[in-house]
Length: 332
Ligand SMILES: O=C(O)CCC(=O)C(=O)O
Ligand SMILES: [Fe+2]
Image (cartoon, rainbow, N blue to C red; front, side, top):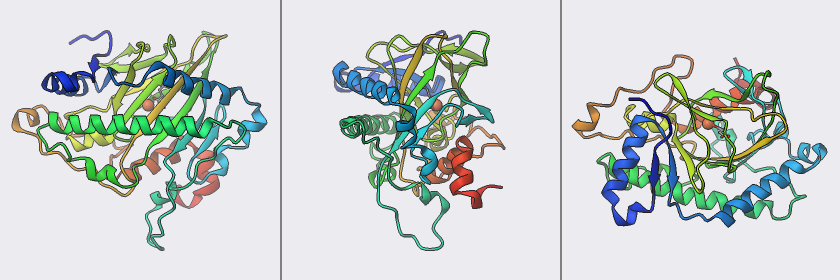
């Protein structure tokens, strides 16, 4: 099959034609692993407030951004300056702030798994009085949307609607990034963020209107995935592939830097279960199981069913300076 653009899935169909909706959702994530989600009910004013907040953050002086720098956070929260982040060993050309769910650390004693170190506080830029409220509001909206999609996937795969609920019920590990990709000369290396699969379950990506650069791998080629008005770009991560024995696909994607003199903002929201939860393995009906190839076996990147293990591994790789400062004991 050739594909020139990502499929579009309309969430408003859930109420009017749920069978058609679930079919569209399942086939988009079985075939491609990526789709545009429209009909999600989050209006433009809310979206624009978030993008304005992102612009305000990146417009702050470097010294102000450095006051919330991730290097100060063992939990990998906060601001990463250009050149601080790596994908597949190569440097990404973007600046960003990571804001996660905030829970008090669990006191699990001496045998606590290392991934519990990811629990803890964000670094909030206090210079922007509305920042925290705007971000928290977006996190809540995206979490609700994420849970709706998880239940629809469950049904579409022949499972009870609540099969994923327990993993997300207590301390779900949501993570939101505000990201800015600066423009670069055509001749320069174009890695905004290098090719990767998302390590978790589900990603809801908002891209600044009109800004291209996202590319999604399909059948060995890169497909451009420019933003569609009023749509999220949605993709599944490695844990959803794991849960479905490969029936749903975690797909490689990357962002190419925008042209010189421009910039591109995006806000990926990663919807993930509790750190210590294990994603349930779905018992697929035979007609679907026949098309489940098994989980992609990459010896450099083994998938664990426990979310926290995947997440910690991904964080240590992406942020070697934070890893070296706070987690040297975990590095080999
Ligand atoms: O900025 C984007 O459009 C995508 C970013 C992305 O894939 C990621 O942060 O995992
Ligand atoms: Fe990604």
